[in-house]
Image (cartoon, rainbow, N blue to C red; front, top):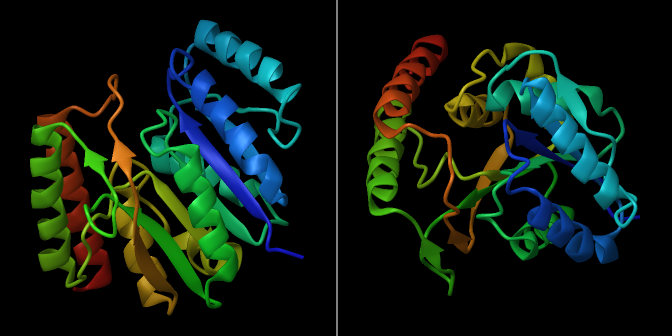
Length: 243
């Protein structure tokens, strides 16, 4: 049997744009089998939770492997939402997440799932927004520029040669995650960096996989504020790691 995959979609006020992506995922991933999808609603207000429940209930009639959503009572941050769902899943061979906005298409999600099922043992896959191997990347120039500065900061401060630590599609073997879950402390936007360093330090290989990416309007990242917070968290990771 092919390794099973548990795909988490962290959400905070995403009901206005997630429905087309859920439908696309359902249609594209169904032929692969062995996949479950769970939306995690990260502490949105009651009205938003009801909107999310309504649209997921409607989609579940067409996508049986879309599970009941997980509603968190308070906002934990993107990493906190993902880790909560990953910690609850005890059976899947792989734990994954993808951003709710559909910037990474369902076809690319399916491609990385297939790569994960063929990957060597003890290897995680991180999607990377890099224009190579025929992949196209459409991003706001300011976001691209800050992303490149941030990636350089991560590489230099942590001594890790990484092109794109923040891309919103990652797949991690459950066994690898369980070894380090208790050490994960950063739940905001820089959670990816801590996850990356702990995976590497635990002996899990991490492969960056180029993907096509088309930025979707409506993101909640504030460039200046969140860039500062992410840089601060990279420093925290460095201090914990002793890099």
